[in-house]
Image (tube, rainbow, N blue to C red; front, side, top):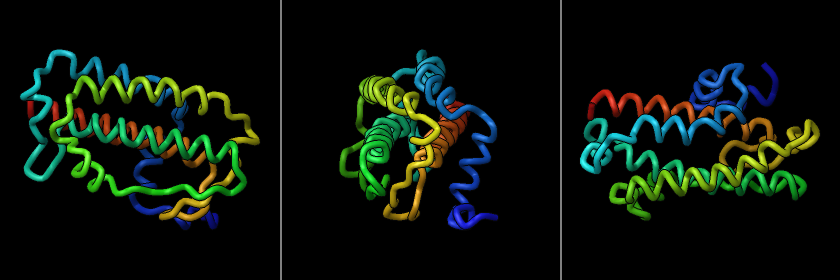
Length: 172
């Protein structure tokens, strides 16, 4: 294991394993359409029904994806324009509570995520091999390359796609 690999948490290892050898940009490009296709026939009650007690609904997942797309986009931009920039983490539970993700409009959250993702894909896709090796300092994970952030973002998509499938299994 390299020094960088030793810094990986179980969450990160699982996220990278979900991505495996898939092209992270391709995964990120297809996620908004994948989600829209899965939820197109659901009404607001089904979208707001959580998977289980103290678990998220599809609406909350969509709100979270829109929020995290802001963070991923910011991190990618500072990684490409600053030397060893700080990359701030955030408390997803605090954001969900403070910005009332439970009562968000699912359509608005998906539209926001889709628009931000389309805009951020321009950044991810433009990265050269030299860009992908640029390093920032994540507030929770320490040194993190553009490549690692890209792979985490794509794996994060896959984690939430899996979650949406689980929720759909409950809400029908």
